[in-house]
Image 1 (tube, rainbow, N blue to C red):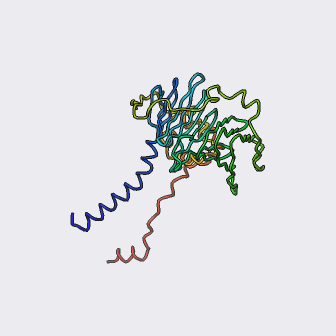
Image 2 (image 1 turned 90 degrees about the vertical axis):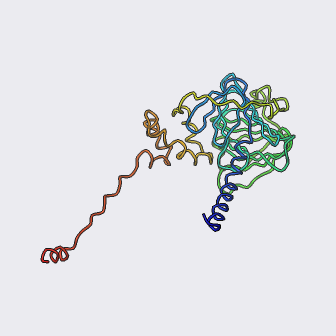
Image 3 (image 1 turned 180 degrees about the vertical axis):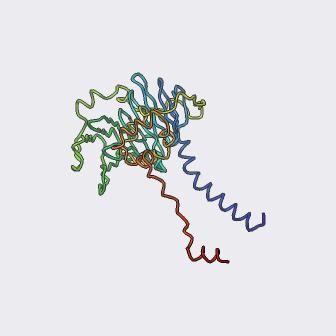
Length: 299
């Protein structure tokens, strides 16, 4: 290898390292601390987690009826998951971002670095928390947010929606039929929200263990993801959905996953080319001119 070729190789390597570094740093930024058995879907494999584990972008989490979990970030941010909660570590952003499919979470950045922020995605809105604490609940009927302290920037889902700053003690509830309506807030949560909120969320969040002391044990495979495991994720409106075709394409080649996806194809238009690929174009025929053939025969 000459000097010029070596220099080109070095520059290319450095460029690749720079591109990969932010994702790697982001991937190793969060530690999951389960309280009871927690389900983690990474790539196409389902794991049962009962010990601390470093999270990666794209991880899908689910807590059971008697379980909970806490996510602790290197910058001091904390996210607590109540029972029966489904949450994703968003892989479409370069910053710490969570996508709440259903259940209860409480997030806090009271003692976190001010140079970063934690994003929260729901079906109704996108929020960014730089300083403070908030409780979020999502189900099939509505998404609710209570800013406990500090402030949070919230943008409603849809194009042309401008971010709005919500201060401490503000409460928002968005139902399905509220789409297209202006954002409405009120001073304090509803009695129903307070009554349903998990008891541990009434207290400030604190770190469970020191990150340096948390042991990241190897994950043990449980099973390959089924349609029942990820079907609700496939039909969400989250930006994370854009990554699913490439990620779960291998599953679409197996049964019964493929048949189950075909039954829901109306809700999965991006999978149509995978499940019903267009026929291959006919091979081009090479036509030899008659004159050329006649000339060759005559010679």
